[in-house]
Length: 194
Image: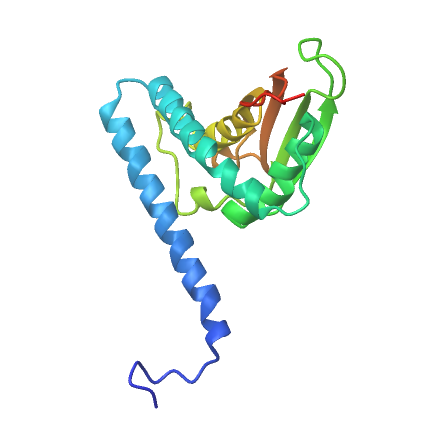
């Protein structure tokens, strides 16, 4: 028996429990933060805006880590960026599987698909949550919209992201709708010496 404890289980078998604790801690901390925002702001619309703004700040910082760790992932256009967010981003940051669908073109963004939906069945930030009466307009998952918006803005894609379906409000799944408003050309901070 070791001095640290009597567990004879292999080290790897302890990881899922540790991951579960981390997810639960995140979920409860997020819930406490939303509750505090509801106390601090006068309207639900202000809380929704603050959750989006917080998410955008998080997304703008996460995109560098995401691109550094996502080997072989290119985000040259909106379609590849949305696919990367759904397949890699949701898996690595939330531990859930998401898919992209409902592609469409809008007249605002130019050529190629410029709107899509991200679908996911599980949402760990809504575990242990029930919306009380009077808060039906609260977009509890608005932080996810902000994270996606903030991350894509860092790579030159200005998008709007809205919650279309939310299982927390009785929907059969979760859906976020992304619409590309502008794709800014990449600029380099240095000049070629020709």
